[in-house]
Amino acid sequence: MFIDRVDIFVKAGDGGNGVVAFRREKFVPRGGPSGGDGGKGGDIIIKADRHLRTLLDFQYRHHFRAQKGENGKGNKQTGKDGTDLILKVPPGTLIEEEEEILIDLVKNEDSFLIVKGGKGGRGNARFATSVNQAPKYSEKGEKGEEKRLTLELKLIAEAGLIGEPNSGKSTLLSKVSAARPKVADYPFTTLEPTLGVVKLEEGESFVLADIPGLIEGAHKGAGLGDEFLRHIERTKVLVHLIDLAEPNPAQRYFQLRNELKLYNPLLLEKPEILVANKMDLLEAKENLKNFKKEIKKEVIPISALTGKGVKELIWKVWKEIS
Image 1 (cartoon, rainbow, N blue to C red):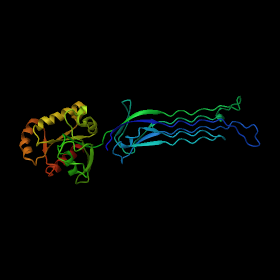
Image 2 (cartoon, rainbow, N blue to C red; image 1 turned 135 degrees about the vertical axis):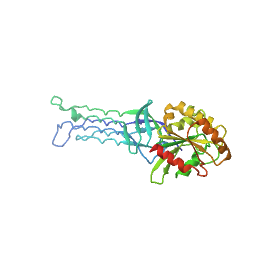
Image 3 (spheres, rainbow, N blue to C red; image 1 turned 120 degrees about the vertical axis):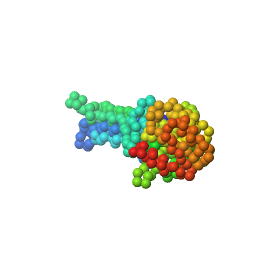
Image 4 (tube, rainbow, N blue to C red; image 1 turned 30 degrees about the horizontal axis):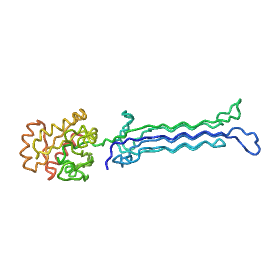
């Protein structure tokens, strides 16, 4: 299951309480104060882990609490500090509080102290003075910080593969990488983003993201479009795949470009590689000339099914991102 947005509650550990205690050795009948300090509460740290791909671990558990600090002890012994809690998330996870971005964990091992544990309270030994040599009071530990957060994952890929449902994106990804997305001849086969590593002949590689099919109204959530559009915001280039065997390919192209604009106008500023797919079909060959005339942009014709033109496309993408 691909989960890319969750709400969670985090609470750092409370500090341990200081204690009231006095020395009671056999030959010290009136020993002074010996109450130790409480330990510090544990922090909560969020850390990016490249082995994770989704926020699934947070789907069924939403509350996280770090360990409390131990109370102080006699003989001026300080209680143990609470253990820190480390929450692991995939690289590319945004941490937000009330719609304000606190941190963007982009790289593996990136980490952020999200809530800090409370300080331990002071024991009565800390309050002894020349005037008050036997204080009978101590200090409670501080409360740990707490926050309500939103975690939002935006996949990290150099190139984003976009297009309408059944335009051939999954087929193309399976041809150029080791990724094995579900491929079938009907809409909405792909229900979650898929990443594939594309390796070139010279030992170079890049990450290509297959974004589930976008339809009219995607920016409002039609076809779960608003859930997937966020994953192309980090890409360097958009590879726009058009099914040229379908009627009115130019109209459908402009429609999808409009969805990008309505979701985030900055997406239209990204470099775009326009790909005419399914050129193994007669209908696509007949539509290509008029499509180029209406679009007035460079178009790369391919057949993801047979592999024709795919190699040229991959090198075009590499040239754009390198």
